[in-house]
Image (cartoon, rainbow, N blue to C red):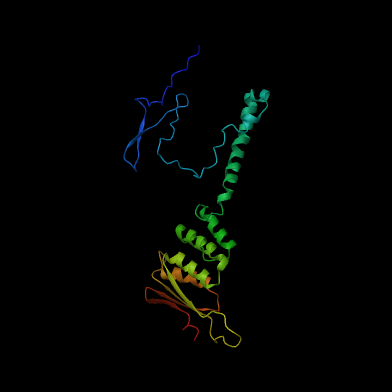
Length: 233
């Protein structure tokens, strides 16, 4: 004769189980805690965040010493001797781990900003400028590099610097042979403000971006801040 064990039914949450209050519902959800590991599982109905950026795991404090043969690892002299090289090598490995971030203008060390600017042909990044301004110049110049010298590239560059929309009119275009106007080397730029830059800083960056033979007229909030058209007459 066989007996069928009774169905234990759904597991109940212990009375002393921890609870968490969600901001979305304001209610308390019970967390199931593993009896051995003790790590709470995600409560029912709580969103699970995936795709988070995870950094490199920390290097073991004895990563080099632990590679010694067993016999040598038992000798205090060898452990201390190899520990000297481990300390030196760890600094080199830490620097190597950060190489991938050197080209990122948002986190690279400040002395590297001028080097990054030089790689893309930008000479307006100077150590005397505020750090935030240096990073802004490198980021905006790099993003517009592929379209540098075009209206779209200039518009993107100006909008990044000013932090707002920009209106650009220029004399460039495509015409049939013999129909092109005599004067095409001019550009008129209108912005609401120069962002956190002064007029002179904004103008210096702008003139570095516009081709040398093109005459520039800059209007800031209805005020003419620059006109090389009259200078060339």
